Image (tube, rainbow, N blue to C red; front, side):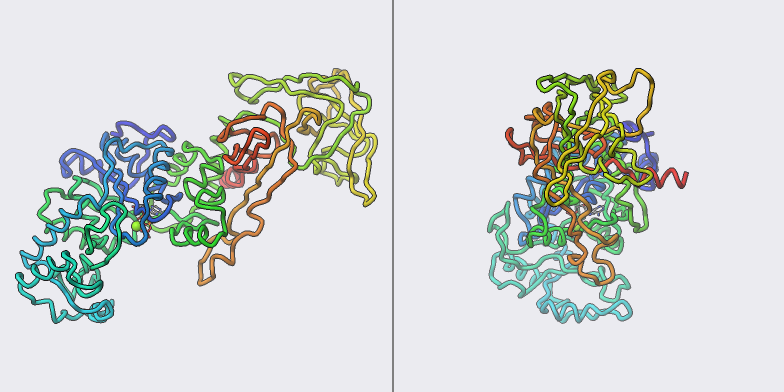
Length: 564
Ligand code: ATP
Ligand code: MG
């Protein structure tokens, strides 16, 4: 039934796709599927939006339908063109296309206004002159019905006149609002004469100062769906109670479209905030370097961190859609990233915290080019030459002077393998005046070129290394979770107090193998034994900068094995 299943996971079923398949079978939606992704341009997109994008564009793909990109730009106060552009970049990067269907709710302002006048003419809307506080007071509560506004019975003529003068700018902000005339006693508070328009003198990033009244989201959204011929309007659960209003407005709009609203549970991710308000706060107060800080759960941040669109889409497919709120383990997202990078990232050697190793019996002037595979399981990725010489660097924590039982790396008198090079044995430890280890004196076995002993003797440790004379100095940024708490901000705790102070560690003196010199921003590697890394846009040819995307340790895979 699915025409074009997901490239990541094939055909998936979920309750939304079931509804759509049934609608198609009964021709309820005119035999076509049209969805939309409706971001408000008041911030950057985050992983929760990515889920919604994958769902809306994925459904269009699956059923041979269309998905519009529509900016819900009805609140000029918080919106900005910077966001409009970033949002488009992010959706494209995720791998989805709206073709020529880029729309703005603000393009419909005139049409929406006409719909409002038509509601007034049919006695379905009125101008109210109560203050905001009074409107709230009159609304009643969950247990008590609301009361009719004293202005509710204004004549059609008076309402039309006032509404037109609202538009013409004759009244100050807040003097009047336009409300739907539905039912102040409805058990659903959203149906108690909801506000449709308010006066607000604010400059709009598209319509400029053409308007001083702006439609409310609850009014603009269903009508925009109807105008665009959307068949299935998919949104998050908090709009469930708004559905009767959505249906009322669509039915009374005079527009031919009959979109159907379907709600699903928003994505909540452990150790992550996905509230735009909080993300904005992190940026504005400088807790992170910007919207694209690699610790941010924004699409821009994840891109800079080194996540791939394929991994994010796979994650969205894996979590599927639920009807009930839940908390998804961020380990699953990281698992999807690892799986994807494991396949595509070439291997390379980098030493993050270098320890000098002098191989005493290696000739002073000799340089040998060692041939290393770019990928252990994929010969098509080829090989590269890595220079080896008398002085190399290894990782500081790959050596221990007094190793505990399970430590199989280098120690005094012990032999280990330098990956793809030789077996070396540690003969001596050189320390500085403070007793810090500054250098190891080792010897190598010339008969073990490539890393294997002809006599078949085994060594337990294999270390990565770089040649001192050839290595390139690099800055490495190690990222960890931005929050220490599984649900930041839960239970009245200020989420800022749960920031992880160790979420970024910068290493200034790391060394990478020479083949990485000049690698362009966005290149991804697996640094052997350390994790996946991406070249940051801050890189220069003189000073490459690498971001750690994820470590190699996969808590999710372990968890799955334990369960399965
Ligand atoms: P707000 O409306 O408070 O500014 P928002 O997160 O709803 O924030 P929108 O720009 O309105 O932001 O969202 C665009 C679309 O993305 C909506 O359809 C919304 O339902 C969906 N969306 C937002 N956050 C999530 C989430 N965490 N999980 C799934 N979908 C989400
Ligand atoms: Mg929203």
